[in-house]
Length: 332
Image (tube, rainbow, N blue to C red; front, top):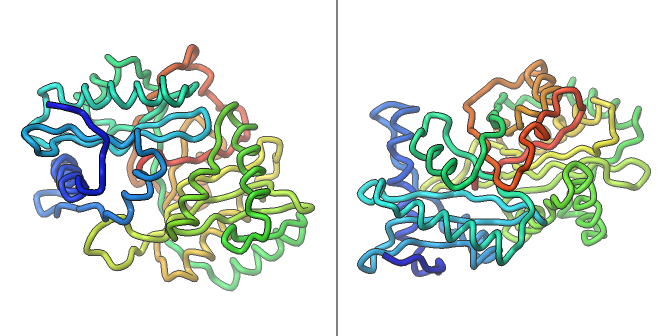
């Protein structure tokens, strides 16, 4: 058994291992008729290229039996997607992959915080991560709602933009993209020191995965939403879902109507691309934003457990009394 850097030649086996390792979970959620879902190689390749030393495979007798992806957002590291073939589970393969991924993020990238998300029902995974120093921090709630960007919503959006002097700009059409990335990095860092989402915006643009919506006030970006428009599954020519991967609002922006405007912009973008469902994740520790979303038409689809390493005080994740919006999905 050896752990080595993933290459494109490994991709067919990587895709198979991920499909097999997650199939039992899909059966639990959808029943015995659940079909295996195979990741698209076009969706995995950007993450390999972004963090080549963090994309690892476990090889046994020239066969890929385990897969892990480690990534960085500034000084924040995260691990996912991670899977071991069912025939090799409970044999130490997962632990070896995790140890190497942590070593990459800790030593090579020198991250200040390290996170992952796992299924709340997976006692085996939670136990493994706990033994490796990860602490349960909060639940990440997966929310959804139907897209119906009606003329009434268009009027509401126009009124919100006019009232607060807000402009909409798509990153793909932004003339000063480097300046925009710097501003988005600054907004991320204001929420948590060292956090930088700009690499995700770059990947989305470079590989045509979707669009990043920028909200500007007086010429300055005050909020952004990174939206995935493509499917990550083989055999699906299109996806009915717009998935917000990251949503950030300036920490000093107390006006909830900014969130209303950004959500309406996302819904508008989704409808323009023929999407019928709007999904996004929200950290449950951001209670005010989470509660606000539930009151505005979102419903809970599922939940994941966010676990964090290098955190001295887990209470620092209790933002119950703060109006902060920092919704991010760690899953690929």
